[in-house]
Amino acid sequence: MICGVLTFRAPLSSSSSFTSISKRPAKHSTRLEVHGSNSSPGIPLTAEKIVNDSSITGGAYDFDRATTSLTQKLLPSSKKVTIVRHGLSSWNEESRVQGSTNLSVLTETGVRQAERCRKALENMHFDQCFSSPISRAKSTAEVIWQGREEPLVFLDSLKEGHLFFLEGMKNVDAREKYPKEYTTWREDPANFSVNGIYPLQKLWGAAREAWKEILLSPGENFLVITHKSILRALICTALGLSPERFRSIDVNNGGISVFTFNRKGEAMLQSLNMTAHMYSDHIYIY
Image 1: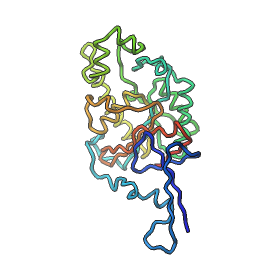
Image 2: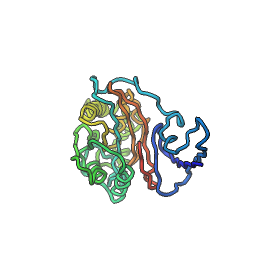
Image 3: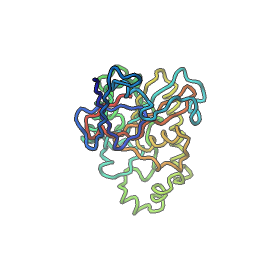
């Protein structure tokens, strides 16, 4: 008799082909016990077989066609991109509008979140790690990438969007001082503009540039560390969504999202905002 025990935990994540390994039981876990006999024909017997069999979860069978190409050229191989939002920053904590400023830094909590991300991804191989050069993302990347041989690669295209006079203001003060502009940014961000400049249009352009820089780089498995707004833009541009859908996606500090790309440079979102590692000792394998 062979018995395989699988533990699944997905409080804030969605994935078709992911395995999470938890070093201690987590709340709301579901345990699937599989029992079988070596003499029973046609029955998968091992936990490994079940974990790797996409038919168990209805995972994607193949990936020949998706949305539109982000590279406009054929890639030498398929790619996998893991994107992490930076840990909690000082201005997150103070509820300030951050934007492209470099004055907001990683807090002690943010460092611990980055350490949890590093632990959660320790069994994953990444060919390269790309990061925004802005402090809070850079510090997060340095913690997560610690101990890896390849150097960090900093891309300006991964910087957070520029929000002009709102940057550095507490949200409550910005709402009071600039009610029209702040309300537009919060409720209709695609139409938020300053002196004829539309930050989201520029952010969408930066996201498309970042995708090209990342996907055309040597390697097949990449890690990306960046900020919430540009992360939203990366997700939306990969899925063919317009700036009007900007606030339809949310990602927590330390949240992990994963895309796969076929050779045409077309994207498939495999997981959005995985956060199980923030509440237990989860290690992701995918």
